[in-house]
Image (cartoon, rainbow, N blue to C red; front, side, top):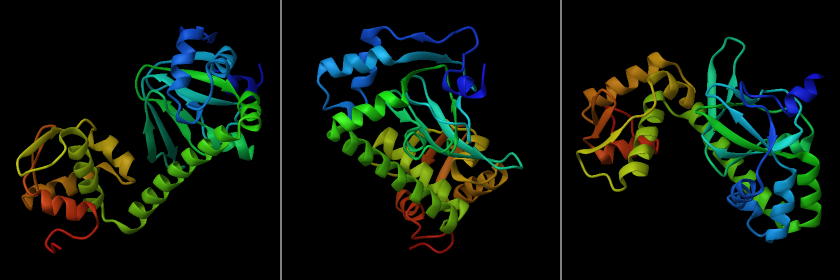
Length: 257
């Protein structure tokens, strides 16, 4: 088997590739935003072309630099998209869940994958051939425009990530993550708001483009400044105004905006 064949349809351990059942594939494809305008017959036609892959945690969906032959749609589980430096340091670009798509960029520029995608949990993905998606875009301009909108949002997220790495101190990056996590889990954040920090310090460092030691130091600074309190993975927001200012890059510890 050639390398390109392995890239197009690698097999998960104990779970060979198989054509997805039509109802399952249709339900998954309906969750994709840029397929929302398609009639049922078109969705069913796409579903019949899909292959279902099952992956264990830590197994790659695709690897950086490999040729791209298909669009991947997450049916269940979670996938991290990450880049790795020659020294082995990882940068997590984004994490996606059910209904999200992966691999659009190389589908159109014919280059290799710009990053690796790895299952962060037991995961199932639909594999839609590149030729099928391109033919759909030619027939349905509304799909192509919606796909461009989706790509534009992703580019915007990457620009924000690049700005964080270039201009924000690690403490500000950690504060931004904590503030966003608190907002996602509990909404408005009065003093004393608590939430669970689900990432380890090593995972958080990969997400924020730094190393575990600097994340640990930033969390300690936030605790010493009474911005947050922490017991194990439980984080309590003591000063939500300062945390938000740090998250926006408008304050530094010791020099509040």
